[in-house]
Length: 270
Image 1: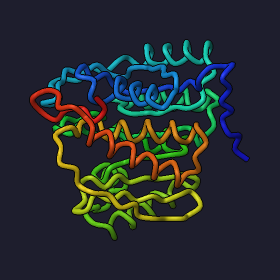
Image 2: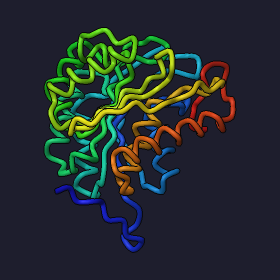
Image 3: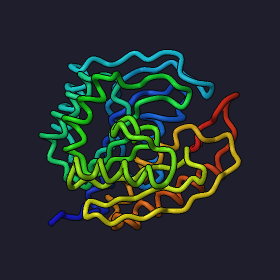
């Protein structure tokens, strides 16, 4: 049985860790994760995997943090803090995937509160994880987490299957589920003709969650916001379906209320 995270006012808010890249425009990555954590009443801490040169107009350069520095940061946080949950985003290199996998294996965070957003490319097309890193992700990290939140393009890379419509999403999700028993999967469908998300729980239950197109330029970081908000709702005690439905509503509302920032695709969490 999984112990629900006990939230005590006397002990302060739950502490959530984000492992991801740094976006200086604060649209995605670490800064977006921390904004979402704060909005849900959580205390966020972080470990940066890569520095990027980017703005709302796209990614210009990526420079990965060394796996030694990343591992030291994670060990330092673990020694000091009782971490209730972890969201993992951009990892940049195979070596960083390995460092995070080792941390997850020893950190003592319950599997239902380990959420992985497999960030493989930026929305502007820049590669954010090497091919070797994708292999390490599949072999070492995905088996350790409780939730995987790919978009359709990421699902195609992880499975090697076409993912362009609902039947293909369902088939690819089933293939992934057979490879990783116990994994909860949410495929975000922003790239589909109708932006519906597909939920497949570890027990085999499946459902489509209807979405709608939102006319806005504030779409940067939607994947980061979704995965971080999902972790928050799980830690707060939502059951898996409630957590995903609530997360979807949260991100949609954030996009609708976001103030236009920058000359390109502004942040969905402003």
